[in-house]
Image 1 (cartoon, rainbow, N blue to C red):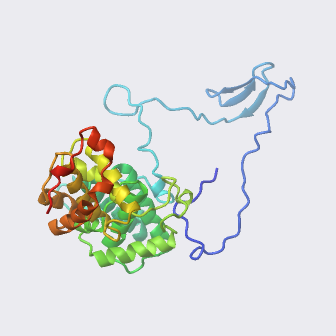
Image 2 (cartoon, rainbow, N blue to C red; image 1 turned 60 degrees about the vertical axis):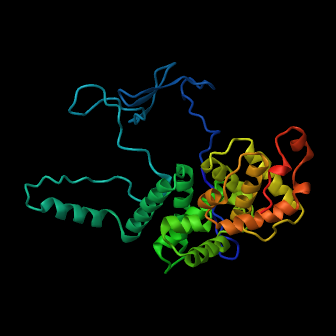
Image 3 (cartoon, helix red, strand yellow; image 1 turned 180 degrees about the vertical axis):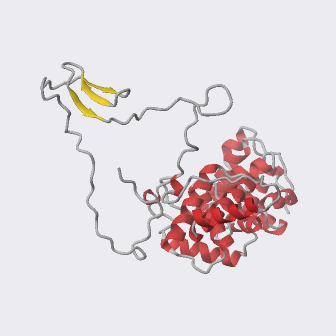
Length: 351
């Protein structure tokens, strides 16, 4: 069975490849006993003797049959059942690499032989490229844990880094910058986007270097906004730009706001975008200003400093967006909110 390659190169970067013929088992072939010639044969696999026997006439149709069933015998020193097999399941990210490890004990009586054996084993088992790949995978998993990101995003970032390493797209770029760009793209594909500033604060990579790596990956893998996402093999949607609405859930949770604030804030942002209000502002600034506007409108005020600490923008930027919304408050606030008593324009501060 063949699987589509995740993160295929864009047409401009992909080398021409000849289409390989597909081979597979012929499911129309059936094993029939030559003596009985029954169209529905009763074939029995006797694993004890390793024979393939016709259950009707007893003719042996094959020998040396391999028992493919699970082996439930235990070879452990402790008593009790030990249904373990030969280690963990194979990792598709490590395809083509040796996934079985050899552990050498540290107990050598202080002679230092164990350390030398471990060093020799690590050199013989993995090549330099495989060791670099394993190091990058560990860094991705560590940073995703620090960011409280789920394993799905970690796997997408690992797959993207592996494809980048295979195609040698970012040769010469720092490893931390490449990993940061992969995590940034993985967050967008999983619809939990993070800003450049948040990624830079986590990875200590400059915004300029991160932007260069991201732009190269965006062009190489056709990750432009609105691109078809079926070719990426993960979420089914293309990498889209970060909108202010995507940041509301996280910001509202960090501010301990009630559930009714987020949908109203989202409607206000969408109405402002349709009317061209605060166009050109960054999504972080719009989200911060909209939250400041909505919390005062609903009587759940949050100070600009609290929102600034969560969103990572200055208080002046938040109040600038708020003033743009305040000037168009009659248009942005729906009449039904006021009639239901949820919103009150008099609660909005003038400054």
